[in-house]
Image (cartoon, rainbow, N blue to C red; front, side, top):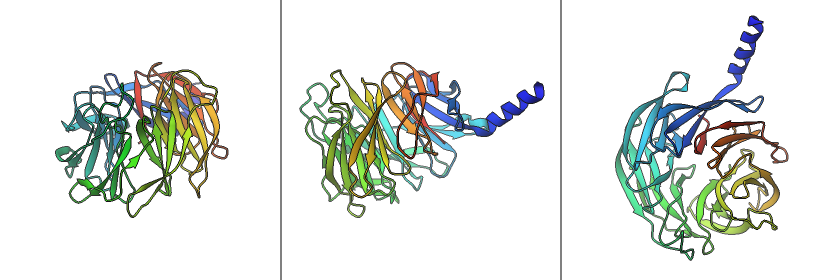
Length: 356
């Protein structure tokens, strides 16, 4: 029996993959994911840090970055058994940082500061520590929703693959701001192409590019829609193609959207509905970029703020902020459809799921 148990544990260890979880609680949590069976272990706290929220990885070094509830960003070295050790912190340059991204050179950290309505870029040292703020770009604008859009509220930052542009969806200003980016200096500057404007009251939140970067998909928090745009890779311009709802036509309750992601094969797009508590699944036309709704799948908990598709394309891991849980949903890469959860575990206020 001991030999059998040892073999089973060894087999499970071979299939285990670490998952880091950013939270609105007391630290960054760590779990193991079995991609053969779709089983996630109960997360444990890897390191204490105030409301780490969104996480990002260095493109080359074993370093994880997080925004903090005390208006900072932090870098953590990933060590043995996926442990985290604080490498350094720095001011984020604004209030309530809610999203971050690293450029492909690994020398620049971009931060979206929600309450400040701003984007900052922070220069990283050779060892990956966050240092001085290079650019601090204030976004101007407002929208018709008096409760949520009195001013700019920046919700995300995204570099293109060529490292030439930075995109910042702003919920309050009803637009995605497009900046030129200089990786040599970490500087942002206005782009010649106009910002991408959403229909009034939309509240752009997050963005995802297709794998070929022909198209961008922006999820709008306040109107429960997705904006589809063509991406001009030479100019940085986003050109409107389509706007599509995230909810079934017969839904009558309260809902806001949160996360959006394109499947690694480029054939499907996924978005989260907070209120209906579902993941909407779209079929994507690779040529036109247009979407067709094919499913509204129960997400396994309440308020799906974030989800992540496993690199294999066979699982979607969803964090539920209000039920303090994370669920694993099986995903069929051929049809794009999601199944019922294979695993659900407790986690305090999950905000970001990250596979290193």
